[in-house]
Image (tube, rainbow, N blue to C red; front, side, top):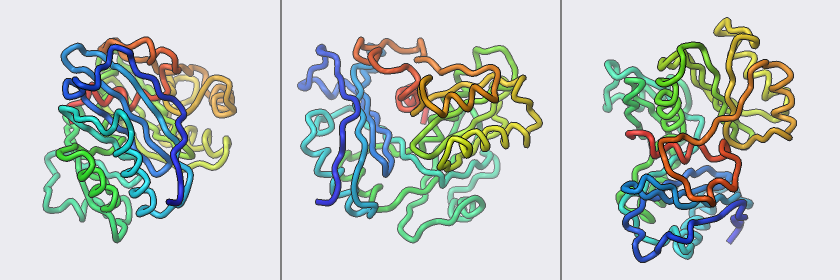
Length: 290
């Protein structure tokens, strides 16, 4: 089979018992670059472990699906039974529609406002309670079928749905001002601008260089007439303080911080062994009513 998954991180609390896995929720963040997953005990409000894998291999979706299926069926954690399985799929093919305007029968037409639906894509949607809107997104049909077969009854969401909802929940407890939240993925960034618990802007951009990266951030701020000196900017995802990406952001933006783990949950010591901001969108899925 063409391709393989390289483990980047994988640690689980020794108190986790495989024979009691059905007490846990499995959350997966999936992209065609790889995947990560967490185990969460809802009754104890406890995040028990996290693993992350990078995909190397064929770009054909069928090859990716076959490899992921084989991997998941043999993995000591993914092959267990859980009371709930929720999956975030990373894609730039998303469209936000205010709730009063949404009609499920028109989801195809709504999706065409922002992107071209691929011939093998399925259109799904999430209700974003805190935004009072629907997030319409596309996922390759082969990936959707593969996930549904592997994890019967699983819920599939757009990664931006969790990002938007958890950010708005977070902002409810902060002083009202304009803030920027940057989620860094492999060669892609998600940019959110909020004011209080209102979402002013959300979009995703592909970048190839550090200059591209900062250009999109500054471009969005300029479009919203926000100066780099006045905005509080928070970083999360695949970025660290020693990286060139952070260096160029810090050069242009005065107030830059890394997002931290929410105090909503309890965390195993193994989670504290990775930078707090690295897998926040996946972890914060447990805060969202999706």
